Image (cartoon, rainbow, N blue to C red; front, side, top):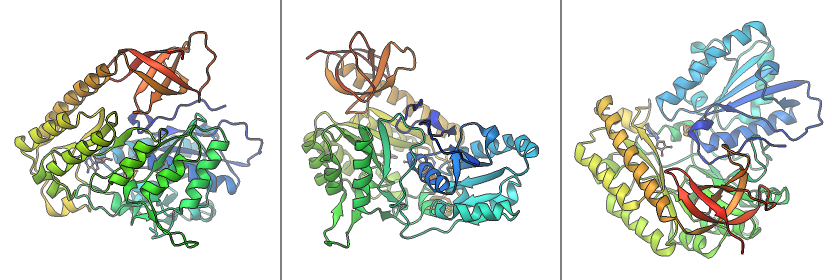
Length: 473
Ligand code: 5AD
Ligand code: SF4
């Protein structure tokens, strides 16, 4: 069976290798090993890559020693992400010496950003394949086997891999990611994504619904619809010409089964509509949780970042969410020390965090990326020590906000989807509430299984976790 728990957006997953553990009776002649870095989109892409490779006769392995092909699905979002991958590459040197026929491939955003330059800089690498070129992997592997390095970093305007059924690699059999769009048109000044993942395009709605239906049939209980900017999802089917917006897609997925939880990520504050909020409110199984990155609390900095909203506009959006869904949890991404950021701007960020009362945030200091608008237009002028100090203040505040939010849940009862035994004890279950909070509770004598919904009352909490007990109704 499956042995690892898929978590939503988890730093500790970086570089995780994975392979399906369901007994696969096929006797593969060749094996591939894949590690993923970066965002959920990359983890989801690795499942598409696995599907393409399986069709080509490659079986997945988690044992790097038996691999004929090692793939790193890389991220470029911050300099550190790239350094991590470079370091990992040096660890393959010995392996390659022992097994010269083994191929090493770089996929994803770093492949796209550095292109053939990667081959010059990293002699070990045989394949460089960008996010829109995975269908050409089999042909590139043939080239690489014959000694020619294989590169394809062409970006596409329409590739969505809609027809490819992802091989669920690291699945607990309960929660799965479903990619609904690719690329990004937003051009946030700090961000490399528009350059590495290309123009925004939406996947055929029918293929999304079909994939979700198949997941339900296979016993899955939760899907997370993925895209860089899900709220600008827009698809017009040829059949009836009736446009599908994100709100209508969300609804179509929600009505597949009341037993299926629906999540989505990421929302851009400028694009999330009342329609989406009302659809969320209408369906019990659409989780009451929105990841709504603010990036900065200063209107001036938001302008420089090209985020297309002001501090006030963002605050009004928070009000609107709470008005339509009073119990809805909100999380954020925050960057400290963007170009020209003053102490006053930084205070604005701390203030907006308090206003939004984020349940959780992903927090970073600004890392200049080559080719981005910010790199071309502005000076990266906030000293590293200042960036780090401000980041620490943001992290400390978020810790307090998370703890406060958890304390407010004491005594409340939540519907929890059991995902697995808790890491600390197999006498306890671990699951999540609709608000995406992790809840740990004693299994007791009841015979529950992963994938079951249970009512859990919160009796204690830490900053990161709720501790509960099953309530019998
Ligand atoms: N430096 C720091 N953080 C960044 N992010 C994106 N680009 C950068 C950068 N150059 C953060 C943003 C984004 C998240 C995925 O990563 O907060 O929402
Ligand atoms: Fe990293 Fe962004 Fe690429 Fe995801 S889309 S892998 S976060 S650079």
